[in-house]
Length: 307
Image (tube, rainbow, N blue to C red):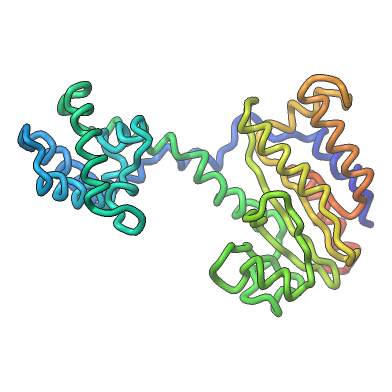
């Protein structure tokens, strides 16, 4: 039988994620393609041979090279970020004129050549870039993890969602957020206007909208992510068959597990208080980690006789 939402939160607190997670090991592998590396080398070879005059035509050629796949991973592209620029900004003609981009590139190049010389991007720096992107890739992996844990098969379209699950998209595919809101008459009045939750699944007449976050360590970004999950808990719909699930992956649940809820306490104590209070006030919503979600799905399937 389905238990109250505090039960599944307690299950989660009592079974936090392990500190080492095997599924993240593949992120140590390089994602740099040979073609990308060749483009980077061509870019840097051009920079090393560019004349001291830095003529407009030379800068234009540089921008064309900078726009090739992989060049955003070069030393020069990294340096551009210190100038509040990016490879895409300088090579993309959608927003700024060629003359504006040439002027900005020239100014940054003058500083780059003076301060950094002719740095070459090697395989080690590319691996470092790859490692730095793991947090971004965990988002997609988190969605895949939730889908696997649910034990449900993927739906092909909104009308096919019975006892199935799907990833929600912002503006493409068969599960666009605006189409879901219209089809199921869901408000989803989230504080962030462009926010799109991760997944939706439907068991009999009940609809579940899930947001997953992978959070390790403490800091400003982690605080923001936890606040976002708690905000999901605070959403309410007039249709009582619509539920929101906040899924916390990563070691952060361990930090919550050793804390005590206190409205005026430490950061973790305040967060724990907010979660417990939100669950109390919004009986339709759930806050879980892997263990809590597994237990929830098992009870849900038993309740509705789903294999």
